[in-house]
Length: 76
Image (tube, rainbow, N blue to C red; front, side, top):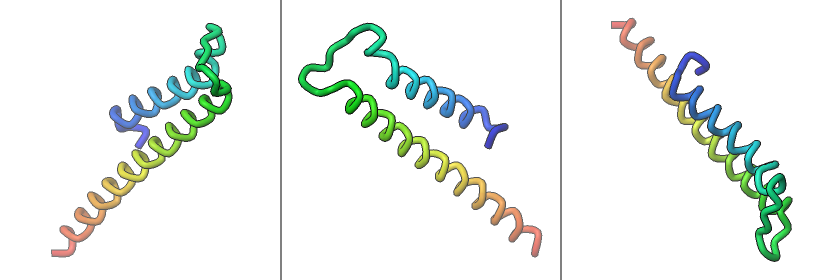
């Protein structure tokens, strides 16, 4: 998957968003109302992690399916 440019771009975006979620608003002193910033930050990071894991699973599934079809086409 590392050689896939789409995957690399998505992963780099994921890392950037995690970093921004972790330090972004607190670095600029942005208030989020009555909700403490660490709770909001943790929620965003968990959401991003689940989204990234789902994308990784889709990529792995597609790769396995393409390999499976390639392996079966050799049997004929």
